[in-house]
Length: 285
Image (tube, rainbow, N blue to C red; front, side):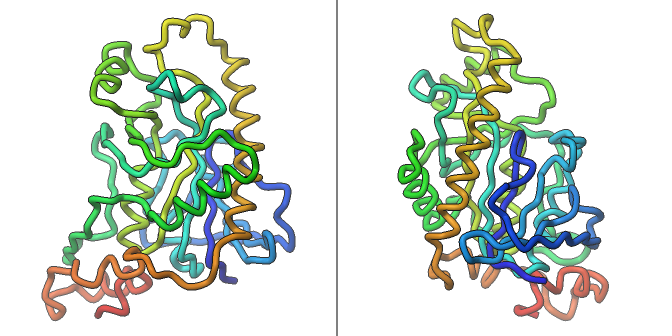
């Protein structure tokens, strides 16, 4: 019941046909229930854990996602790397629908989402200047190119609250700031993965231009859904290729992100908090 590689499936990617030797695992965490059961399976000879971010049948809005439970669950399953897939809107003409961006930065426009495991008597401050794993992102980009995707390494992902899309004023402002894509989910995953010392990278799958585009009125739901399905198909190919390329062992700083982050005196940490966070902080306490 363990896997070293985690996969988070976003809009349109609720399963992966190539997964074999499947086993469903339902977990409870100190932070509540994850989005659904984890599918432990074999992919390209490696054990992986797959989670549909929005639940079976896409039941959960971005603001309803229990990000802490989702990442905590991956941690308890032994996951060291998470590759996420996420549908996004493009904020740049040169990033058309069906392109894939592997962002290296985030900009937070969410409101009041809980995005830390800490609190309740335990304080830690992890570095987040570089919010994704550069090593995993490079592997993802190489895999995307290898399977024929139009892939871009680097870029800034604006994480907005939703569920509504941007106003025209907001969209124009993000473009003036030089942002690249906009979505509703990935920032909290990246923050929590860093706290859990899990490498994290995302495939931002462009489904449409955000409302800034002059041809926005000609974009139909059918067109977006069509792009979503094409993106999901490409994402499966990329993820499988990434898994096949990843080597055991990590040399990136993600693996020791908490080494100097815990501020609280060890004897001041409440016992319940110690127990709840044991999978994350146990080796430091």
